Image 1 (cartoon, rainbow, N blue to C red):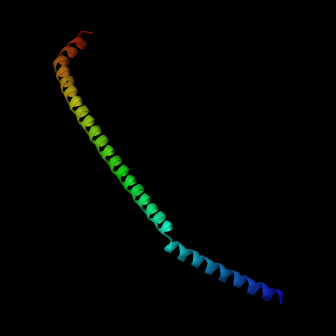
Image 2: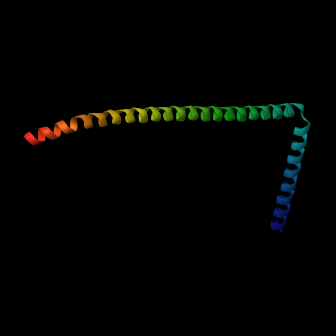
Length: 106
């Protein structure tokens, strides 16, 4: 009998709690203060999302600029290397016969 009473009390508590939750939800929907608070929360959430999107866009722009700068530096380095290689080749061509002559006498 105690088990049955405990079961009935438990079911009654659950039902009462559900009714109270439904009543609270209904009152919240009708309360102007809660509606204003909810609207404010939604606006704040939209602002946060917009700020995150703006930050991502700025980060992408920064990365693009950085990649562009690195590419330009690589192009400059390649150009300098090519000009150095050409000068080195010219020097080698000019001094190669002289080095061969020196080696013969040494």
